Length: 452
Image 1: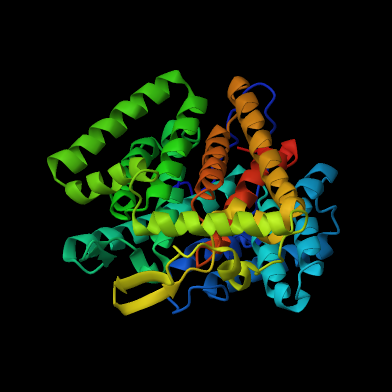
Image 2: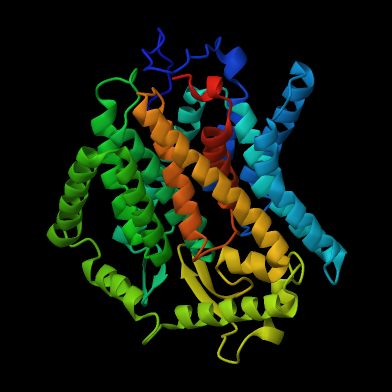
């Protein structure tokens, strides 16, 4: 996917029902993609902060401004009624949770952050993508980011300069540091899924070497993903890959599963890439209810606290950014004061546990049923629409099936991963990019998606 950076010189031969490709005229028309590409790539820059306000957030703000400026200049209707409803629905829940919070002023920063990630950035991506070529450029940027972070992570494991894990500095965290141990795993998973989708359904106008290159990249990215020791990301990636394989076709599914299985045996069994630690980490997934480790026990305690907040205020929740303030009043005494982080160039520090590490429970506790229904309803509509359009595209021989596979795989991954994670850190803005890509495939006008 990353290599599809030059549009074909002639229109691709579309299948029945596909529409002609929309032509772009040089960089004069393509430059609006630049802030989107910057938004994807800039999270790799370390800036010494675990929250928002980093380079990627500034780039996303520029993308929103560019989008707004183009709408004013071109004087076009920005969104269809369906797209406006689906993409704007979460804003209603955010607004209700803000005005009903015990301290509305304290909830305003949360309102801004949620609007940025779940409304403004997805809308900007949706409107700045004109055709499948633009989609592939942004998807290729995800692959590029994953490769850079993956190489960095593998180097950290090999040289013992990663984050601390089981007493050794071997955990691959890329440039994100031990305070954001999910960062590298997240971007590597994004790139792996984009590369795998490209290998399964390579664009028709692509060079012949793209498919094997994408397949090799997807398999190679399994290594840093594994060395991240992030159980939730492993599960989400496996689920998303299985869904993508099922939607790509039976033959591709069987072949790809065989290749991935052989690669796993060679990498872990043959070369012994972290085999003992990986086996122990994988086995811990099945012990979460019998003998959970400290991180799992803390997560259960925070999940329970989020549920208690919701039961206290079931309709509107305790307010945006209200979880930290209400945590101690609702958490059990078994919750530790924080998690230990060290390594990857950072001294030992105690990191406070300020979220339940479950996006759905975080929204339920802070925004109640109103917020959860609005947000999850929007995501469900995007996912269902993306799957439906992908199935129709396959049946009609659509030239942009690769985009559909990427969109569905990323949306499935995000939906599953939010069971074990929530927003926070430099990669937060990438969630908005992923939602925008999926929404573009699911909801954009047929003439835009139909362009190969």
